[in-house]
Image (cartoon, rainbow, N blue to C red; front, side):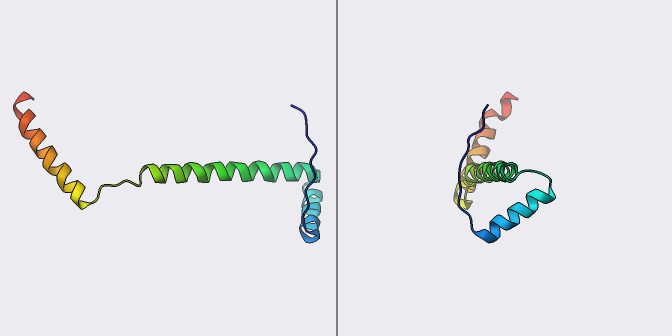
Length: 84
């Protein structure tokens, strides 16, 4: 897979921090930006997955539904009690 060049605009103080960190890590600024974007995407996907899971389990029954389910379980048990 080939590389694609892109241009971004950032404030000078941030650029200076990126430049210093890239030098400290002995890597190119492009490599540092690519690494940062990969990390951001991974964190975003993990947050999205967590939110999707929370949404899926957010339908916990309220007390009225719990009461109804309890009565239904009791009736079901009475119906199948002799069949076990």
